[in-house]
Length: 598
Image (cartoon, rainbow, N blue to C red):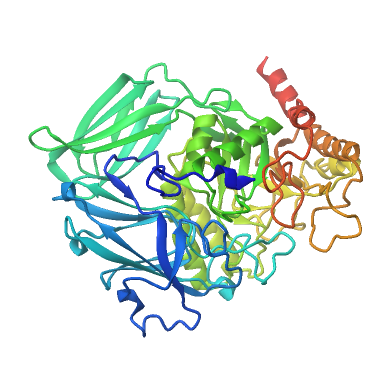
């Protein structure tokens, strides 16, 4: 079971690893572990002075949500309001430093207090945030940290993803996540330290572009950037420590990143004061890779690349949205690769940085997608909340080479002929402004408005029918989930079926007991029938030369939805060698491209 993956540090801290390996400092304190908490079903906590509390009656293990067993709580009903508390201490060696308090993610709205004083507020259940709490802390002293959480999943004002709107999980909706569900930590930073950095690889010009942002700018300070190949320095540059100092570094004969060779360069950022002393040191990495679109093909490193993706929803039996350990995140990617997939569409949830770190390391393509379900996109407050949360995630995750497609929405349908297309155009433009280097799939399998990818969903299991469905008509227009098109017609974009399969299979199920079990279509009656059905679906897709990739539903079973290649506990359901052989067949796409390249 997945609980075997639960690891803690020597000090008893769960999820002890540094949360953001692409922006890592040595001076930090992990705040995971035992906190006190109180539910606040009447939303009367502020009237009762909960922000000043020095300890609530009950205990919870952070970073696991109260719905999960790993939290020690396992409360399954809706939680609209709750409070967290723990003490924090600033080490003496942090004297003269800024103290930054980080939250990996809190669902959904968080208000933070230190010693009863309000220090910050954040909206967005999947985006990380940080607070400068220096003015509230004294070096060598303990302080009282309180977090107030608000979560109104059914309001239509916030994203929810696959969290179920009903008490019991049903269909393709599952157990909810409330409150803190990613690592909380503090770190010490020099007042003139590096706040963030956008790393833009450019394989065509054999260079990398660095766009830094500092907590405070200073012409007296310098930023030294050192790039390494397995420890060997290959490039170095020094610029002024100001936000306008875009740093362009040449990397002759650069090694590219791909699933076949996931090479990563190490990069070190050092801030030097006017005495040439290092006052801030950040370790990172990047991959030299390029994603772009030409005609109806997605290119990786200037070559057409066929994507064999799997739908991954990122749920765990014991942690819900939170992986029990870092090794569990890595293991999910390894399981997918063993099955024959070269990447994943990360579905209705922004995954944590550690997942993308392993995808970068293991050479695994990812599509990053918001938890858009639950937000009423015709409501202006919901749209504002969505755009803030999405933009924070794009900026936070855009340095990961494994991410090749942004997908803001899933199966959204334009019911408002003014508000919906306006919103989709705005979110597309916003995404492109924050990251022009990746394609945007505006609404996976839904109403397309402005999109670089033409994605469709089909759970047709009859191979003959599916092949016919995916064949363009006499005028070259392919099938779409929305016909006729309301806001945009197909205009030659890459055509991908980014949801397919979903074949239900539960070998342990009593055929007369199907109350909870759920999947797409009629379940096969034997293993051989499953393999035949799987091969028929994949063969139909691979036979269409206009299709440049697929996404099979899904990597694992999730609660009652039992259409995974693996069980919910990550045990194999099938002969994975047979599955791999089916999924890794050559496609007509590849044959056409090989012929074109000769």
